[in-house]
Structures are given as C-alpha cells and as structure tokens.
Image (cartoon, rainbow, N blue to C red):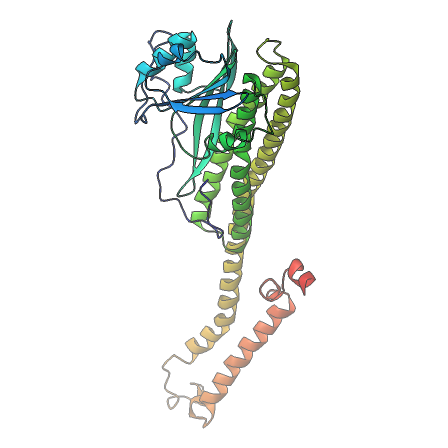
Length: 387
C-alpha cells in the first residue's frame, strides 16, 4: 500500500478516482449482458489446487481445460481471475461452473452495493477492497467471490494494492491448514479483504490528526480543500463498509450446505471487524465534520486578531497624525504671536517628537493593561503544562 507523507500533505496533483459512476451505462440493456469496462486490464486466469499432500498452481489459457483437469476431485480448487479485456474467457468460465448470467454481470463490476446472492449450487458475494495509490489517491476495487462445492472463484478487475498474494503465502503453510475446504478458503479471502481496510484507516487517521494541528496553527485555503477531500474519502469508505457488515451477517444466518457451522463461527470474527471499521469511520467522519467548524473558527479568530492589530495601530497613530497635521499647517509665526510660537523655540522639534513618543507609549501601556496583548504573548495551556 502506498503510504502518505508524514508531514501535512499539499493539494493532490493526481486525478482522483470518480466514485460517481455513470448510471446510464447499463440502461436499456438486457439482464445478464456483459459490458467491457473502459481501460480493462489483460485477462489472467489461474488455478490453485489444494490437496492433502501438495499445492499445485498453474495458469489457465482456456477455461474449458478445467473440465479435463477434474477440478475439485482431489482437494479444493481456487480459481483467480484478473482483468476483463477478454470477456469470452469469463463466459466460458461461467459455462464450466454453470454460473447464472446475472452473476457474470455482477462480477464485471457495474456500480453496485456489496451484496450476497444465493443460487442453487453456489453463493455469490461482492465486496470492495480499498487502496491508497501514489499521490494520496484512494481507490476502490470490486472483488467478486463465488463459492461452490469444493471450489472458490475470485474475480478482480485489476491487480492493484494488496491482492491475494499474501493470502497464498499464508496458505502455503500446511501446518496451519492441513485440510483446506472451500468454505474455509472463502472465509480466509473475506477476512483478507477486510484486513485491507485497516492500513487505509490508519493513514486517514494520521492525516486527520495532522489536519487538526494545521487548522489550528495556520488555516489556509489549501487546508479547506484537504478537509473536503478527506470527508469525501470517509464517506466513500462508509458507503462500502456499511453493507459489508450486512453481507457478513447474511452469510452467518444463511443455512446453505456450502458453509459449515464452524466456518459460520469464524465469520463472526469478520463481522466484529466490520463493526469496528464502521465505528472507526463514524468517529473519523465526526472529527472531519468538526474540522470544518474548527477551520471557520480559526479563520474568524485570525480575522479578529488582524482587526485588533489594525485598531491598535489606528488608535496609536491617530493622535500622532493629529499633532503632525497641526504642525504641518504653514502659518507664518512672524505675522502673529499666536501663529505657532513654538516653531521658534530652540528645542521645539525634539519636544514634539518626545511628546509623540510619550503618547504612543502611554497608549500601548493602556492597551497592555486592558489585556489586548495577552493572546500574542501568553503560551497555550498545554505549552505551560509541558514546561
């Protein structure tokens, strides 16, 4: 997962992912129609066979080869498909596994909520996996799981972020899972997908703390953009985590023979993680909303400080300007004894300067007595506690 900078980020330079899909892309099409996504990645199909004695992994060029390979007869088969550039492979795979055309349409990745669908001989589950791309860019990738009798199919649109390679390495430890069933493999895949949310939330939480410090210290227009972007990311994550919890609970309640009772017990742990993710997102969302109020308060406070400074300067220079204006009048002192006789004093100029300095000092002392300089000179409460 790409990590964000430790210091506060600047406005993002990369183009963010558009989470608002075009809702008219599948309008007026027959149900089950496969529509190739834009910029589809090359299609890759791989078969991993988990038997009691060994693990065999091989690429699949033609899904029809799975028939001759007697899939699932010697153990549990994990089929991994990535990329949708070749939809014919997906159709052929659907024929081999006897998948409903609606299932194939869901696996393609049209805009939809995470969900669980039960069919006569398999279960379909749709999740989303988050990842932080370079440039602080949040991206969601749909992951489809189809659980059958002694086989599991996982479908991903692209190979981004933390894919299932780490789970494969874990499953390579035969002592942990000496006998791997298909429902156990599905549970581990679901748990692996849920685990991908925690690093993302950790980074967003750290960024939230950095934004809090920056908003109080020096609120800028760039910070406002970052706050909006962070709130948007949290909203998007909440939109996929909320139904994720419902999907896991549905798998626990569903009494399908494809999921054993001990696996349902394990899925409760996934449900607990989903609840924790949702609670964390709610907390972060509240903090992000409060950040906007703190930003507006900081801007108002800085404006008040500027207005206070201008008021002090104006008040100090007002009598000084009056004195300078009076002695700037060009009355001839020789024409009348009332026309500024002090202009002829030998120390008149220094006396006026000293009077102006004394007036400024007296005014500043009065402002200090009234506490107008306390906000600039007094340290914060926490700074005093640290010392």
